[in-house]
Length: 183
Image (cartoon, rainbow, N blue to C red):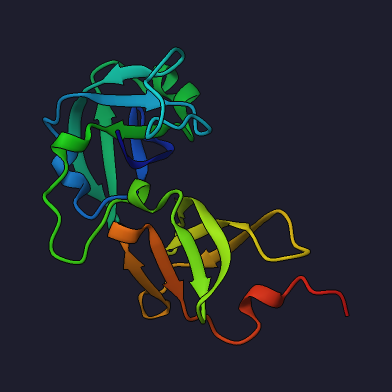
């Protein structure tokens, strides 16, 4: 499944939600079959949906102050909708638009090795959407003497992807990966 977005907050009294969309055309959700709501920590890219995740269908879609706003048939009013605030909305991969040349899915990046100037620095754990419009690439740090995770913004000019070889080359600004070095 692909992440379509996260439910922000209920809007009005009719069970509508504002959506933090993780897709380019959220209006395509209306009428789409196979949608699933899951708790925000659930990862339906790699695991099948299990309770408390639940199938939903879009009852209505509109734009509200430049943001997607949708309602589900399963939630007739705000009281029924409110417990799902912050939940993730997932869609079947088959429902997604075909990719253009040079495009990829977020889940295609997972497990790819990241190199800077030919040296391995990390492995992609996931890509997290941000409210400001770009993804955050979350890496497991593989550099000697390092541990943990690093977050690097996906700024297109910094990244080069070779999916066939499961490799990403990163050309970050100086110091970006060294912000945690001891003084």
